[in-house]
Image (tube, rainbow, N blue to C red):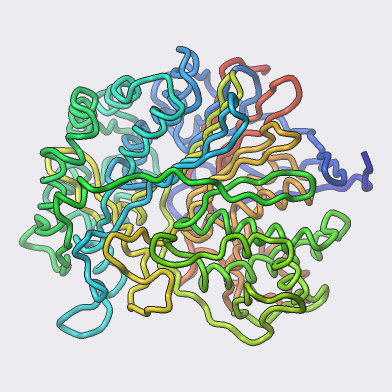
Length: 634
């Protein structure tokens, strides 16, 4: 193993979302020693985990979450302690990673209803220890069969609806949900539990309730006007006209009954029965309050759209990176292709030998180039040709990497490359910025079991609070996933609106293998910043020698082929001056037109010697996450 000199990696405090994580203001000013080694071997020294309550304690608040757990026999990590505990209980009762992932996801539908639930969709990546293969499930929402190309154009003005709140808060934004079908397929392919059994812990949690934390209350208040537009939503989330108080217990008995119904009658009741008819009816004719001033455009969904919905088994994307095999999600997600292309570009350079500033400069440039190609080439492969083989080839990466100067940032936006180019540098001309149609709220979970199976699952309803529409008496929000389509129809746009089509996603559940065995599984929410979050985590872990805890805690920057880099304030404070010398400019995350003040909210499990697992969640972002292992070493 070749070593570079030891250096100190300082991870300063992260900028917390205003009003949400003030209770954690003293958390995270971490000074850690990063022992760095060259590829493919990595430093594996780890910081001590934050102390926390027993994994068997009752309902918890954000401040009692434990973001790191080290041990054996299986691991679960998510944004929520109750959901993590549900998954851990499944593993302890003999369930495998698929069983625990579905049960954890169902629990997140209770405790993270503004980010996930059976009214949405997602992407599921799974390593099967028996076969030694990584496979994926595409559970992305689809456009109704009657959706016209001009669905997002206001007929009164001839112009696109205002994105938020008008277009988001609507029936026209709702895609055919894929989450339940994903759970059924995952259990059928890899699980040992039936869906009904996997839903029971979440149903109990919905009846018992959970303790409201500052994040939940703040998210409710931020959506108060939207939620007031729908009587069913207001009854559930605005009892007495206000958001639930911090420290109170929030119960969702309607969702518990819905889970019970599905447990008894199967997913057919959702896709072919009474629930299907109710969903379609509410999308076409949203039940609004007479006092709302929001336009709430009607949608086009019919019961037959739910009846025809299918999840898709897809081969994963795959690239080799410095001795590691990186598997991700293929189109209609752009996550695997964009992360993979950026890694291929970075591999053309000896990044581990660079200074931090040089390395970060190359990370930002590679990300911009990959995002340019994402905008030109990636969409639903059933509707557009996606040149995935070329995008992920070393030959194409070489034509993009040669555009990167070691001293000077490219002028953004950069142009997409020519995937048919046979040599030289691809696309020196100026490009255009692809409109960012994705919002920021999604959730992610990572699970591993004692047999070596690994599940990485990102699920979503898109906007915080989705469409704002709770299905009456059913207890769950409908998604606004169709707003991920481009608003204005262009036949050359791979993300144009088409009937039955899956909108392009940035969801990037990723499993990294080394020597034929799992090394790291990770994912994140965050709209299009999901891609840069996952990319930066891999870059920090593999190239910069951070531990996975350090990588998740480190401040983030997101270059998505825009004139200015969106970055957390802590990143700007630490690296802004040095990177400005290359020509990079920065906009603080949370500023108008950017992201939330925090970029991403990752979870990960790293696999060490002798079957040891290190499960990690965010120590601060989104109120902190929760990690747990079956048998702890601490």
